[in-house]
Image (cartoon, rainbow, N blue to C red; front, side):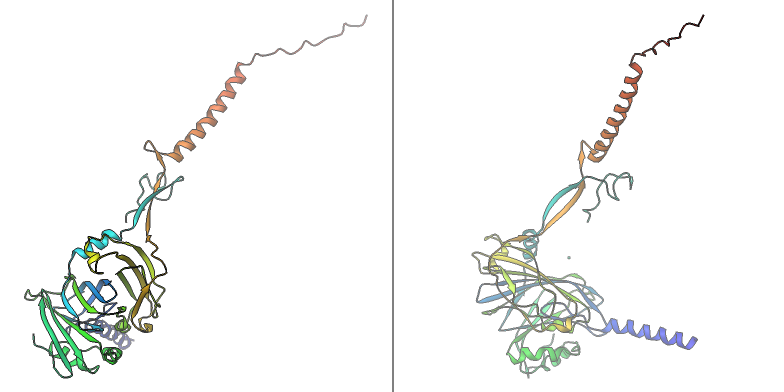
Length: 369
């Protein structure tokens, strides 16, 4: 029995160690690979895609956690890309424009958190982001240092070519990544390989990183998703699309049906409109879940919807109906009870005030003689 217990404990420790050295993948358009012996989790990825019919721009921002001091991020692109630091104002304006509408609705009868059930008549329901790689068969077409990012723009003539670049930069190619890159190589796509290494000595990659902005030519609005097939756990995608019209995915590519969380025009003088070339810009916000990432069949291709129908989520705040600081139900029930008591007292008093009518005299016949 003791031997079995030790075996189980050893197995659990092995699983824990395995989870520490396994790579973490960001849902969406890239694979995130931490350095050996460390772990890194992408808590949130926000992707903003702008398209004017000829040029596509993607602004990404990651919020990460873990103990990694460096990591690599790989993204396939259909044509030669330029990479620069993104503008944080994009996400500030995005949050403002797509914020849900807040409305208040009232209810009459008290609920569990209202007096007299909880001792409080307040409503709490509303309480609530280096050395270059091998040049054959990988070609390095550009290399820039952007803040904490070392960006290399690569071409590859065969799927395993990235392995040399990753190993030269201190990373290990995750199992299966070369296989998932084959379709991109066949279509002659290129890659953006980003080495995340904070300039501060010994700093870890934690929190919200600076956004990156990629720009490349494309006659179709495509959001690469194939690399998310490598994820082991259910994934979610939050995608903000800026284009002349409301956009929709052509298919669900193996996930749940995409849900529109916002649709509407954005201000022409804002930073969001600039991502779609200016002019009329329509923002479509999409949420999608992938319960089984292995079923992802390809990349998202988006097309114009049948109509530019606006949509905004509504968040309701439920409040107890009050009048003068007093619950209306209490006024109603109390008033009703007071009326009943008053009616009963009135009846009692009315009975007391009635004159007492003496009974009629009893006729007694005279005695017989």
